[in-house]
Image (cartoon, rainbow over all chains, first blue to last red; front, side, top):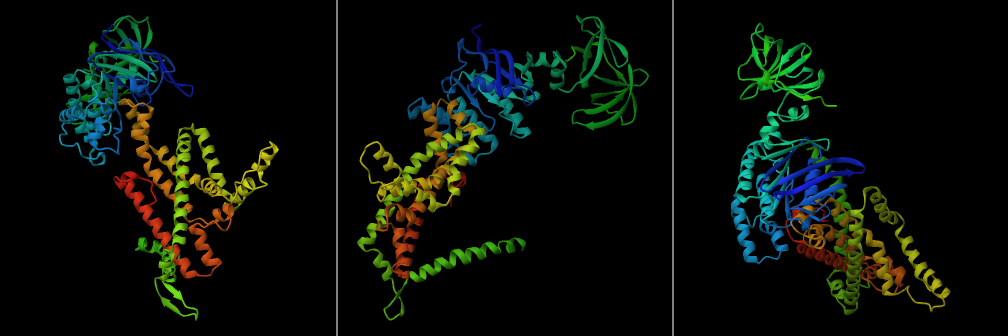
Length: 346
Length: 278
């Protein structure tokens, strides 16, 4: 109970009568790296802004270490935020930017200077004290924004798509650095992103949201291996999703034939979504395959080839390290483990 | 080539209507005419302008223009803040309310104040209705100040409003997030970032205030000599264009100097200051 540092109960947020976040429950454990993941417009940023205090929930209650903070203004919350566009103060140099929160707390100047030099060391920008914000690159500004938040020693650090504006290589570096910082400092991180790979790399726990509702809460491995519905499956990595019928436990019909599978507990003949990861599909000789298809396109993706295979009126996405040329007839092979059955989306 | 050609009309305009007139005023100011009608070069017009009588006029103009600018700032800043914080659907209408009076003729608006403030004007009419003694409003320094504030207030409000509107809201949120209450956020973030708007507001109120002659003519009467009245008189009454030009040059240099000082005062990196007259 007490290790839940932030808790939201029945949180709903409406803007002009339109619900952006719909009655969600969530909690963040101490020292956890929690990621709220979802497509744009899913309510993830609004949720983060409610934790920060920039938005007040239309209904529901928010708790911090057991105390209600639903209506507490941001400046009274021991929570700091790293903003998407950094939001560094352009009229102050780097030193003054980082000192902002400490000055408000009226710390002695000596202590401020000490903390700032420690922080700049942490973010690898020693000697940047006197520089102006405009003279920094995007990646450097991002580090300063993180330093400015962390120097206040918040109990929870909120990060709103902080790496969105950086190039791929820098983003990967920063992901690892952020994760290390979180471990070293022992601060709870709540991270918002639409990048599923980023979420899988860094998080201890992921909340997946869509249309203002929580789709699934779980560890990265749970969410990848056991997606609760077709949306999660599709959003976390690419998936083939087909309509099917669950005839009985461990037996499903789709693509005009029956397959053995490992799922059970559905109503007899329930309509279901059948989810198959592209990397689980094996292409074999047409004669040995369970299904037959024709390779429609081949794209080289670096580590693997991405092939689209026409089978009946379906298109299968297949990831494989061996390439089958365009136009060739192939067989599709699946094992029961590769087939994931989900309740159909209404 | 096309670029150079297309700047032609602009260069022509600047030459004909800015540079030539200034050169002409400068030429007039450095020439004296003897009784015989002979022209001769001299700086006597300028030395004459430093006569204590005229220095007093200049001092009065500066003082009242500074007062008007200060009052406009004190009234204008909160107004701009209120406008910037309004919900969008009322905002456009409210901003228009500020602008609409400017569509009306400037003279007409100032005349209107004469009928409001006059001996038999609306305010005194109300006072006598209540059995109170009449008060002289018109033809006082206060009336001139009121006229300036009334006429030039929108020029203070609009640039400040624009800067506040364009301000990145996440900076305000970041300041709150770092522990700043409303007053701290205003003092440390909103106000410093609005300085460019304040600077252009101040120059747009100060410049017309220091050079006006219409407002003082109408609301104080002919005898109240602001530097604008002095120049007007030299041209239209005394017919001493040369002295008038000298005073006009001095006024121009004065405005130039005060703008330069103000810009220095604004400080910082010019690229970060945004909207500005310079």
